[in-house]
Length: 401
Image 1 (cartoon, rainbow, N blue to C red):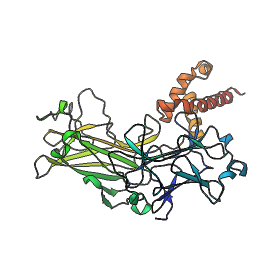
Image 2: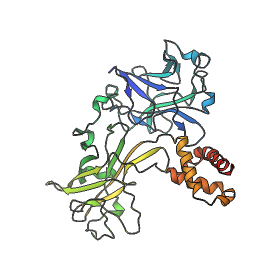
Image 3: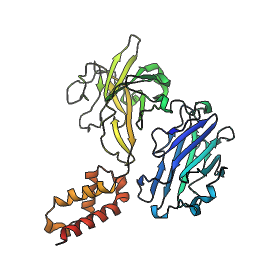
Image 4: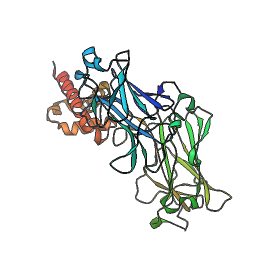
């Protein structure tokens, strides 16, 4: 498939597959803003480890710089890689700069790589830059790891399957996924996921995992498992509001079990659980609105679209606990723009008495600004210096005659 397209769920990263060869492309002239650690500026990112089609392999990719001032895309900075030939880097990887003098192309020929066990023993490494490598003298660095879990097999012929624009879901379409899952794009603001849960299939702690599917930059993960033995219930649970709270459904077709004293973590997910004619089998249907946005996750790395807040127990219409499910729908977090920070700082400080501004604790101001931005604790260091600068600018402005 010699077609270059956006890599689903990533930022500033495209891919192309030519038989057993994978090409990755990113624009080195772009910036995604500060990383969550605040120690670098992201240029391109896979936003975690992303599946390579249906091949069974995953890719983690990041390009970054310590500061944009150090980025050099002149011939002095990138000339060594501005060639027709690829240069080997790490193990199984090659790269070059394209003729536009700003696009990095990384090539992995899977017909020539030798898989080896990773240090964790849980995966097989196919290709790696072996740490973060400098991209010539550009002031940019790149880190790449490509692997597949030891519990899976790697099928190179399926590198692009389910990942290209032609495979993207459209309104009114449905797709049958591996493992018995089905996804239907009912309307622009409605998507359903379906799975038939069979008790006998979940023996010995098996967890059913839905394969990734593509909807622009939206990633949805769904896991279904049996109730833990220590918490298994054969009796009906109370259907009173105190113990079972509906997430938007009537409860007539099943729901999430919400326990006394526990905060409701379910966001934008409605579940229906109905028995089938077969014994110990239930049809599960999850509905959510893919247009929703519940702000940044606690890590700051993604925007929450729908979530069960971890594993939640599901009950049928009679109140019997059937299984546990975990659903998480998210998009990559866009970088926090300078004007967003300036607006948040002004909103926080303008609400204070002007006479007290000089006595405010920056720690408290930073916390309020982060809440205003919807930023989690993990983003504090990345935002600290930028917020401090905007606070200084605001104080200087209001103190000027």
